[in-house]
Amino acid sequence: MQMTLRWYGSKYDTVTLKQIRQIPGVTGVISTLYGAAPGEAWKLEDILSLKKEIEDAGLQLAGIESVNVHDAIKVGTPDREKYIENYITTLEHLGQAGIHLVCYNFMPVFDWTRTELARMRPDGSTVLAYTQEAVDALDPEKMFESIAGDTNGTVMPGWEPERMARIKDLFAMYHDVDDEKLFANLKYFLERIMPVCDKYDINMAIHPDDPAWSVFGLPRIIINKDNILRMMKMVDNPHNGVTFCSGSYGTNLENDLPDMIRSLKGRIYFAHVRNLKFNSPTDFEESAHLSSDGTFDMYEIMLALYDIGFDGPIRPDHGRMIWDEVAMPGYGLYDRALGATYLNGLWEAIEKQHKK
Ligand code: DNO
Image (cartoon, rainbow, N blue to C red; front, side, top):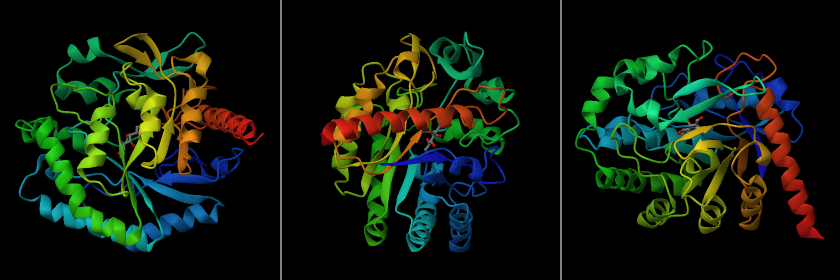
């Protein structure tokens, strides 16, 4: 595996490439063109300049998170063709730039959802948290407003204010989209893009829905083993693959994470590894990566990745806000660096144990 960190680009991130380079064992970053709106075709020159900036800092651009999928494609409106064409152009340009991993999601309206961005833990750190009770009490159109005050002045991907300003229209677009329709639209999209992925050897790695259940009555399909295996089968091409995110699939305690990893052998191209601490099945917070700080056995998760021969990029996922850092919630430097170091430690131990 290759240890990486997500990086939002010099215009948007509080963390620098120089800092990332100094985290032991981190050799790459995962990034995107943050200025690009979903549905736009990316220019080759913009991709090349992002890549160059990263390489000049001594790191590798290990993959893109995300090339966002326009809502017209998810809903299946007639103008989806135009947006699929643009997506194909973007993939062509990524392929020409030598990039072979694309993370994306197929979540309607909201990307990942949290009800608090700065819940205080007993040690004084703050973390992202979710309670179903808070969601149930909230008008979906007010979702963004309810967390906007805690973004530390950053723009969180998937929660861009311009997008949130259109929230009413977005909900209206999805009014007759159910799980089956969403599956069908995902299949259509994948079938259209697989030829270009085959041509340039680009692995598409779908990110799970987070939390892994329906919120505000919207359909959500990438939530458990059955659905993800259904998706792998419905477009049975090795370039149709998965981002295994422990913190997203893990929101549903019925998901057996190591078992899911093993059943996806050969199709996991990217891993997001983090821990959650559950206070009840519908109240969880994003703890430190360490097993003892949360609910998941992180050793078992890393072991399962090792067992399936996972060799793609991995990244510590959201970190706590510690040591007075002010950064995008979940994406500060310090706790993610601790996470990377911890995951590297687990991996080294597993590797040595197996090589004995
Ligand atoms: C949250 C992220 C997600 C992820 C997208 C992928 O922090 O893991 O926003 O990047 O869902 O498209």
